[in-house]
Length: 226
Image (tube, rainbow, N blue to C red):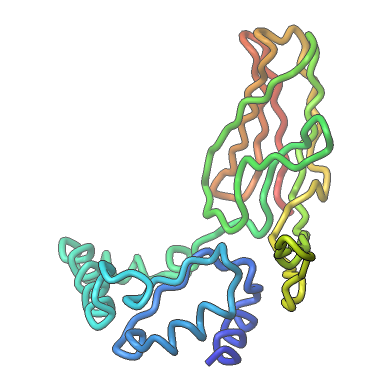
């Protein structure tokens, strides 16, 4: 089971750390061993939805039929021509960005504005704190890295001596993005209230528009997709 799950994730071009949630459907998902084998593949941050972990979850036998019913209710009001148009590749194959977009923080960290795999057109913004009357903003594509943290085995103590657990130190992995490809640089003068709003707008043709705004001061830049 574990090998099959890992092969599915790999076939999708992803890694186990990229999966936020796993929904188990069908009767076999009620088997504790199946759910446990799936859970062991992923890090602790990944939520595995199954009756064995949460008795209040929807019956797995009903999920597929429920999804089909919801989909049917959504298309019920459309005629055949409209449904055919909705099945065109431009509609079905939703355009999305492969890497997150954000800015570099004061310490060089990556501050995300739009997350990876977000469909566009999309418009999002964040507000940054600045220390002076002028702000220099660098916009980047995020570069995916894997951070490993070693958690030492638990130490046991008593009145006579100290003993350590026989368990090996645990290595906890998490995906962390750092500034990658530089997309734009913007300078904002006359900053009001020591705050600058950064707006990222991706149009339907994939072009990225960046706006930095503080009070009446607005700086804009366009990055046209290749």
